[in-house]
Length: 375
Image 1: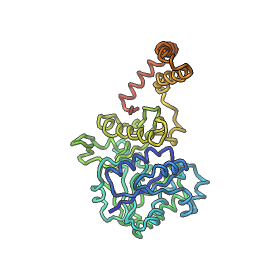
Image 2: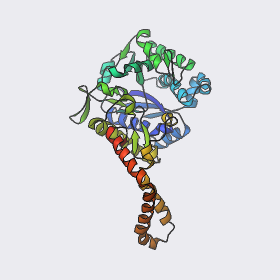
Image 3: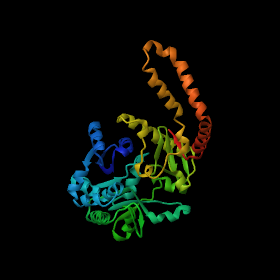
Image 4: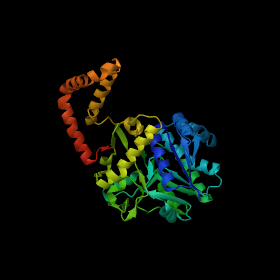
């Protein structure tokens, strides 16, 4: 049976979307992934790549299907407009893929870590499937942002699921903003009423589905028989929510926001493999390494980490030297290389020595604590 998924992302999240596709190829070979391209650059890149199993959609197609999205584009921010796409996209896919028995929406920053057989078995014949945040006791107040997370949502092709999607679409078109207001928050808090309002809603209980920074403290992670185990069950889908690249080789997982402590399994078996995959896929699409994990939603509000102002000093000096050496005749390059590089580095390091040592100390501390991860 072909499993039908849908997601959306723009060029900033393109590497994440490609990583999701890569993991579907590995663990769910018979699939279709419908991608709503939120920017022209994203669409052009995916057209060029011609990846197997991907079906492309444009915003123009989405707005033709649901004309009210044109109005929504004008009265909310770009991120809020993207949130408003969440209920419209599955409706469009069900329209365009008549053979699909169900469609599963996935956030673009998910990654599969194993086959999904256990998930499908748990969902069974349910009309709708949703995943709870599963906040640990110390973060229980975060439930004000929603009992459930939009990261994984499955809708069967039946009247009940369609009624749910249409109700959700109408609510998001009315109000979908990136702030908490009463019983509303973006596209997410509307899900709170689904189990009471609609029949056949399955709340997925598998701890290895939609594991994320906000619920990591609720579980013990282990490395067993070559895979990550969560509360005795295999990790199947991880949600890399809030991940932010702060330098070419450094990422902020934002665990500090959830009081999560670094562990060898979390860093070495979950995050570092994902970051290496992002970096490799970024190179594949012709982007620079520093663009592997851009997160515009966070970057406009948060400055760069201070220690990272200096961690690329040696790379900067190397580039400066290379630029000057290129102006020299080829026969003199290796004669001047050693002395030129040594002098320039010494001069720069003399000016910034104290900042450099302090930055290195802070960087080591942050890597040790898990505030930063190096890929």
